[in-house]
Image (tube, rainbow, N blue to C red):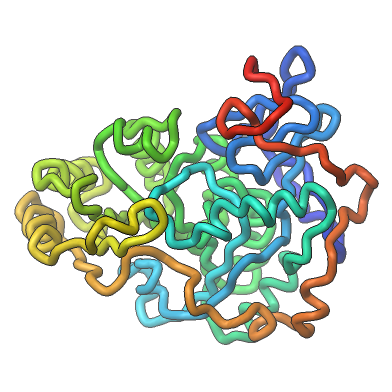
Length: 363
């Protein structure tokens, strides 16, 4: 289905692109593999999609948390348009809760998304056309959707990626790959690159950051993206004591070889302490070298040690006004939905997944 971007210059809620009406006033979101079922006033696990009277809306459409221009190799992507620069952009919301997250305030976006739900946000709003124009002005050759999880920002990613391709820009999607086949199929014609985590081959590891996630789901989404013709590069951030077993790392390399091919790049990245894992030391060089050696030994031709970078972080970015038209004061005016008076205290996180008073657990 070819849906035109909404014709709006002011912030407003946009209908969630993949939603399914169910019985008993429930509506299911089919953007990511949580497939949250929501009643009126409830928000899903990502907190970026809310049910208003039976229809799901994306709170974060056009809302920008961070931007930065840099080499595509920093995503990390090394086998698509090497030597070019990409403008990285992100919003708020994530379907994982990683204990070592470096983009905590924007990725989880608890305060920012609460403010959007209430019509009190001062976050910057940028239309897809304005974002493409900003990318062209910056001199970058592509746009990367990153920092927060783009799977929960699909409506804006899709509309912006379409215009980017028309303008001759390439597109990069930096993801945890806990995404539905339906979403991948919608995005595939407009995405050039998927840079995806393979965090572990242990369901227990994934359950710590997403109670419903299974390794098979993540790997299935990565393989699906490759089958759809998207260039795929994978990365594994090695966390001491969590996912640093040499046999498991070798098994990740073997999966890449068997499912993505010998030439598919694998990036081994260094963990740096953060948030709940602040007491965990940085990844020792020897285990990274072991993973690299095992990757080469199983037959991968493009294995990379990224010892100076652990994630695609927004730390140290220039302010948004460095890339966008308008002053900081102009960009950060209070955002109320322009289409209705629906903003208010409704829109709390689903109690089933997060503690919040007054929400039923039976959905």
